[in-house]
Amino acid sequence: MDRRSFLKAGAAAPVLAGAAGIPGLARAGAQGAEALPTAEGWRVYEVTTAVTLPPTAAPASVWVPITAGRIGDYQRTLSTTWAAPGARAEDARAPGYDVRMLALSWPAAGAAEGQPLHATLTNVVALRDRKADLGQPPSSRGPRESAETLREYLRPTQLLPTDGIVEATAQQITAGAPDDMTRARALYEWVVDHTCREASVRGCGVGDVAAMLRTGGIMNGKCADINALFVALARASGIPARDAYGVRVDNSAYGFKAMGKAGDISKAQHCRAEFYNAGYGWVPVDPADVRKVALEEVPGGLPMTHWKVRSARAMLFGAWEMNWVAYNHGHDVALPGSKAAPVPFLMYPNGETVAGTLDSVDPDAFGYRITSRRVA
Image (tube, rainbow, N blue to C red; front, side):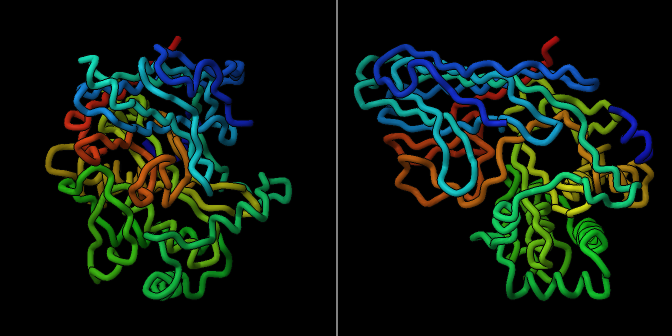
């Protein structure tokens, strides 16, 4: 399958309402539903996160990411509902970035009742494949972003510095490139060539970019590491860029086993990346998934010269297959009500109980399960 085949295929954030924030009730919350898009290519998925903790965990707090309401012309959250008996539940936002989450808290009294602490969050999301038509010249009528937003996505974060070794590496990679698109392409190709997916890394990694560059060789990691490297190098080159944190919701319709997951998606979290170009708007990329195809598409992996890896490499500069849903673009996320330090990003449920912090990348040990199904 080549890039042409791939490209041919294929608001406001919703407000939760109801009995949110009222402690002690078996509660349900819901947003006003958004209309289903009628244009060709939209698919609808129901994504449900269920959390179950033992009664002895109380007092306990859990933060579950909510899918982004409306992004570009490729994602619409149609409805968001929850049920959380005995808990205080509210639609919360982290300061700084627009990171939405269901914040849950169970009081200590819940332990005396002997009932498990249980909550479910369900998002119904419409998705369609995304592409930037890079085969056409840039247009002055291309999608525009505000100057304030672009400044935000040039800033360093705790794990994505834009000075020191990051800046020096970016300058070396982009030397002689005449414009932002050429620089972005050079960074993408360099990241693909100089990273390697490492299966032993827990979860999606953490995205410590400077630490990766200090290895001086092949930089191993997973999607939150590899795509963060692209984002940091782009920002250091003066190109607004951002990570997109989300989860896979369906198998790939384009024949890539490594780039899809349906049903139980508790371990299917995936971080993507994008950069801004004035002639095209936000341009999707995903160097991490190129490396995932090379490592996991078939047992034993594929060489980078294999046609399937080369196809993924061509596709993933400018296009995303939307069998994946985005939560947010946030970094250094402060969880409301938590006494712990901010988390690097919110892509998994996070939790704190009377016994301590729950392991967000281990669904079984934590007590959560995420499922997806396509809705007719």
